[in-house]
Image 1 (cartoon, rainbow, N blue to C red):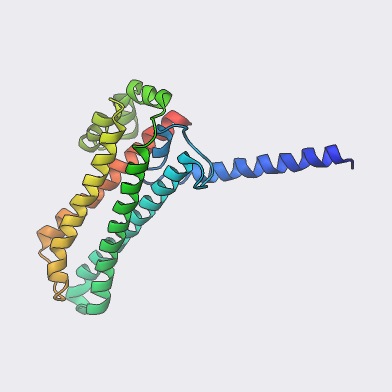
Image 2 (image 1 turned 90 degrees about the vertical axis):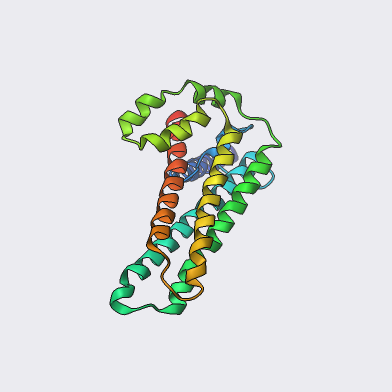
Length: 225
């Protein structure tokens, strides 16, 4: 086998590997994914810090990961609350589970702040902004049975190409969750079950924030793929 043939085969394997990697990344579509595609130079399949789009992608994935870990910890906390009438409260586990929800939400917020600050230093990708402004939001919402109030809140930003406003709303959603978690913490610190109304409102804040970010990912995915 001559050198040219070997080189060609090697290039084919590299292209195939990168293609598979990009496909795997494209299916990480739970919360806020593809936000980096609104900024120039656009989407990236790599996570190298030398590339601006990759830097944004890393912040997106980091924030999403911490957000989901916080939500999962809060669900575990709800389980502890639900079972407390049967088996009582394991104070250490009860507190640690709740504190994990706060810790991860604070990290999610910090990562998204980094994304917002980095994004403000670069221009937006105009063709993506144009597609967001022309997108059929009504048809998409009806087709996928999306929650109308939450989707309309998202639409108010994306239909105007207002990515900065969207980023501010994401951070505000996390601030809303954190303010409720801090309220709950007063009772948790004492090893007590917080007031149920506060628990319900915190659950609602998590759900609304997750759907807001998820719907953004769904719109971006529909445009990009």
